[in-house]
Length: 236
Image 1 (cartoon, helix red, strand yellow):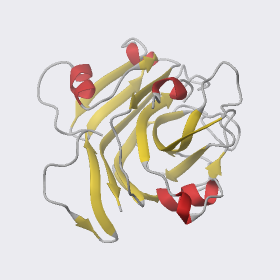
Image 2 (cartoon, one colour):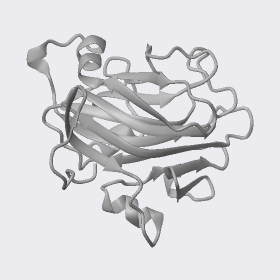
Image 3 (cartoon, helix red, strand yellow):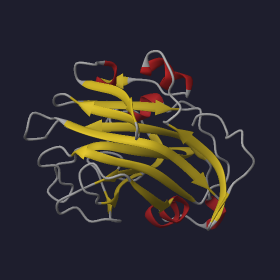
């Protein structure tokens, strides 16, 4: 099953440590962005299973770096970039935790006002059943929930519907941090899947991939943004 084409518009290996129990679940999969040592950042990310699509290939558009808060993604101009990772296969899950933050939000970004821009978004793909994109030019995709950090008038926890993937995709702001603030957000993926897509418990899927993305194509200040991410953890 291929996801790369499906995320056109739109984890590393299992932890070697013994299973860790959270307050409400068991840690089953983790992606860390704090273990960089030497060499090109691109090589380090490819070693985790990430690939580079659209402006994520162009360092004059999107700069990739590593700082004390992990991977830093900085849009230098109006850009759309996506980094899919098909190596993630989590058979059972309930929620996800993400340690991340935004140094600079795209100016004017507002899902409420239809300006669907974000400094960083984490897509989680669920199952293998492909849903229509709504365009003959965009490949169909498995169900997905895309999480982002917002500011302004966007509603936290609201499942926004995009221009495409109206049946199989939802976009959710999970926190509204201050600029530069590192936050840990927890989101119940399984309940979201059941609720957003009207699914029964017998239909619970596996996680079949993730992607990191940013979009500043409609930003009013030249498209500049900056965000960082330390870790993604899946629990069941």
